[in-house]
Every structure is written in C-alpha cells, then in structure tokens.
Image (tube, rainbow, N blue to C red):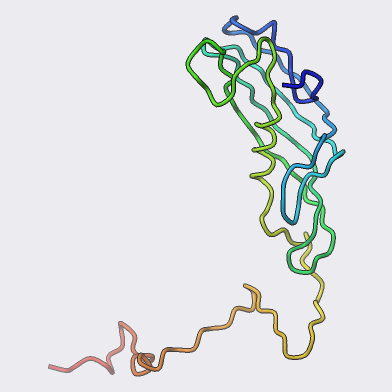
Length: 177
C-alpha cells in the first residue's frame, strides 16, 4: 500500500475502539482514470468524497458518497459527453489477525482506492448517450437507424397468419352450440 496515495486514510484513533466515529471530506485528484469503454472519470479529475469511518469489533466500517464527473463519447453519435457521477459505498476493513475480509487494515491505514474504484466504475453507463438526446444523424442513403422510440413491428410468421385476427373475446371465431 502506498501511504502517499490520496485514497489512504490513517485510522489510528479508531483502531480497536468500538463505537468511535469520524467524518471526513476528501477532495481527490484521480491519479489514474476510473473506467473503461466509452466513458470514464479521467486522470486528474476531482472526486469529492464525504466519508464516515466507524470503529467496530471486527474492524473499521468506511461508508460515504462519491461525487464527480465522467467524460467520454456518446454511444450513438460519438459526440463528447459529460455525465455526473454520484454513488454511495460501504465496506468493512477487517483487522489483519481476525478472520479474512475482502479488505483489511494495513496497520493503522486503510486504502479506499479499490472500494471507490468499484463503486464509480459500476455506476458508469455502458452505452452513454447525449443528455438532451442526439441531434439528427446524417446517414448515407440506404442506411436506417432504428431506435427504441421508432421500433418497428416484426412481420408475422406465415405459419401463424390464420390466427392474426383471433382475440380471446372474439365471438366470430367460437363455435355456437
């Protein structure tokens, strides 16, 4: 663990003191981009983290909210987009000598980087779109762009064509006794 990382927090005053709690506000310049694909929080962008650290018998519970901005390209028109990111997280950092946890304290230090990274990356859209919708796209002749708003009905299977007019309440298709 790199003790100089902006994600590393010293929790010496909380270790093995159940019931103690501290709140911190962090402003982190992201050392490397968070996310892959069409949109990511870029290197050097700022994340604001409202952090609550609570000492428990098992370790230190870190919870909070991350607020920032992700930049990338629209999946439809490839125009630049900026998407606000706001995500909550909660993770227990266990004591090293106790049973294994996903995340453990390293002495008096805890590293929020994997927790924040996971929360932010999972909150990013897989196919981001322009906030106000894309402007009309100019496509070459013969190319159509079908979106969910202009979804076309699939043609009926010819084997079922005789049943197209049938409805459950239709009296015309029922036998009279």
